[in-house]
Image (cartoon, rainbow, N blue to C red; front, side, top):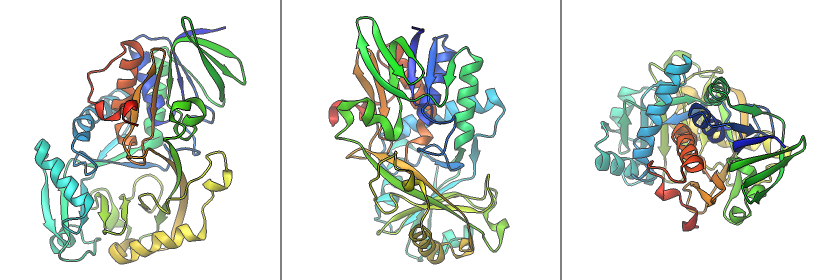
Amino acid sequence: MPRHDVIVVGVGGMGSAACYHLARRGVDVLGLERFDVPHNRGSSHGDTRIFRTAYHEHPDYVPLARVAVEEWRALDAATERDLLKTTGYVVAGPPESEAVRGARTSCDAHDIDHETYDGAELADAVPAFDVPDDYEAVYEAEGGLLRAEECVAAHVEGAVAAGGAVRGREPVESWTETADGVRVRTDDGTYTADHLVVAAGAWTDDLVPELASHLVVERQVFRWFVPPEPSVFSPERFPTFVLDTGEREFYGFPSVGRPGVKIGIHHHFGETVDPDDRSALEPRPADERALSDDAARYLPAAAGPTLSLVPCLYTNTPDRNFVVDRVSPSVTVAAGFSGHGFKFASAVGRALADLAVEGSTDLPIDRFSLDRL
């Protein structure tokens, strides 16, 4: 049986980053992915992801976000790809909405450079927005977006260039711990390793029974609109954004990658799905209608015909915080990124390499311990 130092199961956002950091340290790493690399069946596709440090979910995320941006910039420099694009980032809504209040708290706690506007001032600064005058907006100039599939590709190419191995279309059927590590069985063969990292997204509960009762897979959908005035949504004129209306939270991007303006509703319909159900990844008329309502009301300059509807998957924990921890001395897991984790992939990959090789990490991941569940 071929033996490696570390086997990584799942080569999406987190798994590809783990392979990269491990290979760059000289570790003999094998990445195994059940689908293509990259693919559109999980949580790491759809062209773009927001990057922000004005983190409204909790101030504890800010130090990790700062590590992540350093790692993304280093990867950009190493690969000469435009992975992290600075467009500015806006979070807006009623002043006491969860997202606006949380962003203010993180900015204050970590001295994040930002500006605040009321709704009228936001509309003057970014004419595409049409929000109530009594809304509040927090603007972070250093925010922006990540090119999701490009990030996965860059991590994989870097891992392979450093001596790592990645195999696509090879699902893991089972694994067992042994006296000297782990044995992993796929439909193509059996491998052994000193350590196993599971970063399998929506399929994690099949591989890590300890998490099966804590992870819920949810269907999410993005819509790309044809704006009547495309230049209004260029990256130079329009930032990434989160708008918390008090009823729901939706978010969007300038026109980057595929044509049009990308908008999504965070946690969409809250629809729990089986990740192996192919129909969950088919767009529906109700998805299009739901995404039309918010665009027409708050972003009318974007509310044109549909160009694309693209479903993806969230894997949620009960508290919407991640799991990045050792399950046993031979197994580490990264899971439950709950729709807001991709931006941290570069830092999480580094933490996973630390945990696999050293058994611990100095990165700020205490919030993501398995024990809290």
